[in-house]
Length: 358
Image: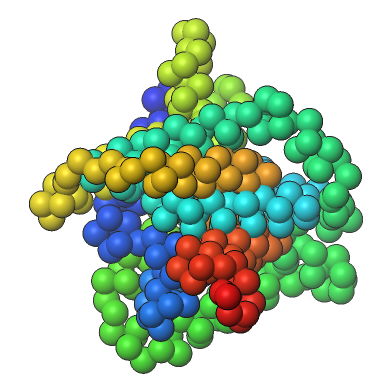
């Protein structure tokens, strides 16, 4: 477990499962929201919600068994940057609507031969680095130091820990159970979805990949002689880390789990596209489409760093830890996506509020 190959290989395995599953099942957060709002088809959204619910079940079970130490996750930091979560989520959702998918979706598209996906990922990486360490970093640091809620008394920003601190009663397990029940009940209130076997299977596979990430990095953290970040899948900072690895590699750095997941996701999607004879080169049709992709990708790179995650990072990985940031970021991403889609499809962002485009 102390081998430098363990983390990237474990990430590669998880990414292969994520990429293959998402490509085969057409798993895409923006597509799920768009079809829910504009086509009355909630199957994609229910698959996404079921993935999050099952990720909670698998991850919390591992934590209860002592196999995973979620307290080491940055998602459960006692300091919750609420402004970054909301503003970053809105930016990410708007950018996602302009591009037509998120960072994870861009990797899935790249696996099928989309050069648009490659451009989007490069811009996400560069703007993510600018926000982490460049000219936008001071603004991010100011937001993190001022617009925060301190949950030190609770010990973390876990929903269960906050409920326990507020009531004086241990409610960690109850919070997990109630959250899962609420999500699963909503998913299966649709009779048609109960027989949607491919969607249910995709949700199980994605949730298993998320739980595996927590397990693999926890094992590495316990057995390695160097610091290891306990994490699972996310697709903003790891994409930036990949660019850094290639761009300024000096011989002292090695790929981590996140970089392995990024590689694996592309390879898994490529294998799925090859099996279904769905591989083809794609590029932007004109300068207007390219500009929309560049702008959307920049918003996702900046917003993803502000929000500490994306649709997968916050929506499923952070949700599996029951971090209070997860639902807030996802509601913000949804709001940003709704505004963007209203502008693109209905001609005005005001349509998102039920007002006519004219």
